[in-house]
Image 1 (cartoon, rainbow, N blue to C red):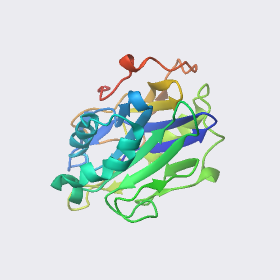
Image 2 (image 1 turned 90 degrees about the vertical axis):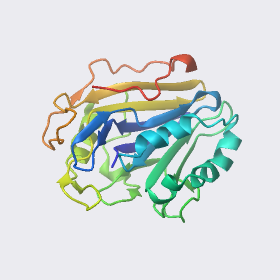
Image 3 (image 1 turned 60 degrees about the vertical axis):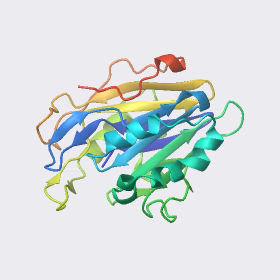
Image 4 (image 1 turned 120 degrees about the vertical axis):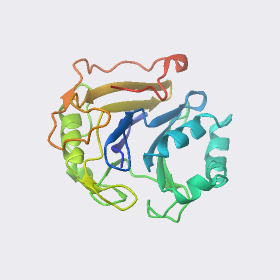
Length: 242
């Protein structure tokens, strides 16, 4: 499971994801960014799925030679289906795209029927959605505080505490029941001028080799002031935290 929240706002899209990669035992294997970026056509992809296979999925995505957003949208599912691993290991993608001209697009792709559409079919996502307590993404704007404010850490802290406390069966045998969200919370903003990623908070007590404590304190980042997007050459992609 991955912390995955998105807001489609006026002129941009914001993704919030965590960085914890878990072993089948439910213990932390590593901490890594779960968002792949495509700066040349202003798109970012948040991933969730089997923790053992997420690094392979992220690596695969970043190595694809998509030249345009149209190639990416039309060819992504076909590329993924060619690899046996991604045909049977469950995964979900949340794609944020903001062209230089035109409206923002937020959509999902999965190898299982998880977004209300058949597997491998692109699914438009609502303006505000967050991962619920079940296995699917769900639109639940009433369950969120006001629309996420980049200069106020209260919403991030609320989301972090709420979603961290959802315990889930984990591993091939669907046990043990563990917390699955941890490490850091990374905010990815996509707008018409570029992509910007930053850490907006973390669970400082999370450690590699240890299970995640649902009651651990979450500490928002001190400097949360909104900043303009960086140039594509300085965008983080796959950087480990912790």
